[in-house]
Length: 53
Length: 291
Length: 219
Figure 1 (cartoon, each protein chain N blue to C red):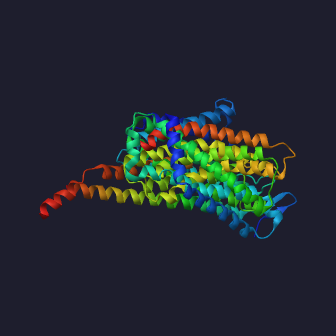
Figure 2: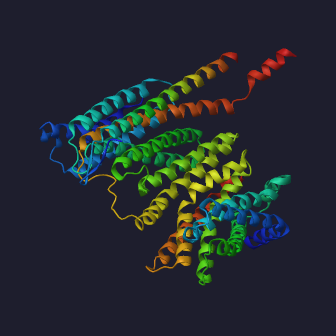
Figure 3: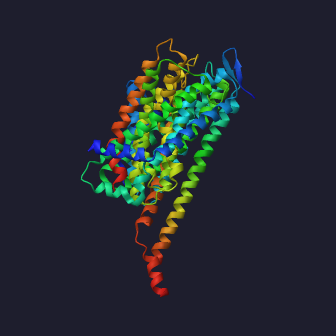
C-alpha cells in the first residue's frame, strides 16, 4: 500500500487523495441523479393522476 | 423566482468567502476592504448560509427547474475551482504531505452535514409548532441529504485515517459522533418508511429528529472524553496550516449542491404527500363506471 | 395522578412477572454468549465484564420496553386512557418510572451472573447500584417514548432498537465506564465525572421526552 510514515512525515499519499475526491464526487453525483430521477417519476405520476380525473 | 434578496446575501457571502481569498492569492489584497480576517470569515459563512437557506425556502415549493439548475451550475464552478486549487496549487503540508488535500473536501462536507442536520432540527421544531406540512417535506429533504453527507464524511475520514494513523477508524470524537448521527438519522428515515399515516409520520419523525439532534453534543463530549483516556497522541483532525482558498470554494460548492438536493427532495416529499392526502376520486370514478 | 399511573404500571408488571423471568433468562443467556465470543480468557472477560453487562441489559431492554405497551395496544386501551381527564405527562412518567424499576431490577439480577461468568466481583455494591440506577434511567426515558411510538407502527421489533441504540450511546459509554471503574478500581478518581455525565443525560432526557410525549400518543 502506498503511503507510509517516514520520520514523522506521511509520504506518497496521492492514492488516498484521489480515492477521497473520487468517492466524494461520485457519491454526490449518484445521489443527485437519483433525486432528479425520483422527482421526474413523481411529477409524471402526479400529472397522470390529474389527467385521469 | 423570488431570488433578489437571497441572491444578494449569497453574493456577499461568496465575495467574502472566496473572491477575497482568490484576490489575496493572486496578489490583490485590496479586495479585503481592510476588514480583519475573522470578520471576513464570519460574513462569508453567515451571509452564505443565510442566503442559501432563504433561497431554499423561497423556491422549494415552486415548480421550476431553474433554481436547482442555477445552484448546481454554481456548485460545479465552485467545486471545480476549489478542487483545482486544492489538488494542484496548495502546497503539501509539513507532516501530512499530500494527504492534507483530503481536508479540502472533508472539512466542507463536515460543515454542510452539520448544517443539514441543524436545518432538519429547525424544520422539526417549526413543524411541531405550526403543523404546516411544507416543513415536514423540508425536514425529510434535510434528513436524507444530511445522511448522505454524514456517510460521505465517514468514508473520507477513513480514507484520511489510513495513511495518517495506520488504521481505517481511529475513534476520533468528531468522526465517531458523525457515525452515531448517521445511524440515528437512518433510523428516522426507517421510521418514516414504516408509518403510513402522513400526520403521524410527520409528528413522530419530528419528535425523533429533535431528540436525536439534542443528543449530538452529548455524544460528542462523551466520546471525546472516553477517547481521551485511551489516546496517547493528540489528534489534529484539522491541521494547523490550512490553505483557506480551496476550503472556502469547496464549502460554498457543497453548500449550493446541498441546497439544490434539499430543494428537489422536498419537492418529491410534497408531491408524495399530496397524493397520499388527496381523495381517491379516480378509483371511485372507475368503480362507478364498472358498475 | 402520577401515583395512580405508577400504581397501575407496577400492578401490570406484577401480573406479567413470568415474562420478566423470561427476559432475565434472555439477559443471562446473552452474557453467556458474550463469553463464548471472547473465549476462556479470564483476564479479557474481567476487563470487559462491564461492557457485556450493559450490552446484555440493553438487548433485554428492547424486549421489556416493547412489552410495556402491550396492554395499551390490546383493545385500544391507549385511546381509552387518553379520554381520561388526566395529564398525558403523568401517563408518560408513570410508565417511564415503572420501566426504570424493571430495568434496574434486571440489572441487579444480572450482576451475580456477571460476577460468576467473568470473575468480576466487587465489594462496592452501593456504587454499583447507583450506576445501575442512573444507567437504566437513561435507557428508560427515551426507551418509553420510542416504545410508545413503535408499538403503534409496523415493524415494531426492528424500529425500537433502530431508533434507541444510536441515541443512548452516551449513556452506554458512561455506564460501562463507570461500572468498569467500580469493578476494576478507580485510581484516578474518574468515577464522579462519569456519574455526572449520566446524571446530565438523564436530566435532559427525562424532561425532553416528557415534554414531547403528548405528540406521540395523541391523534
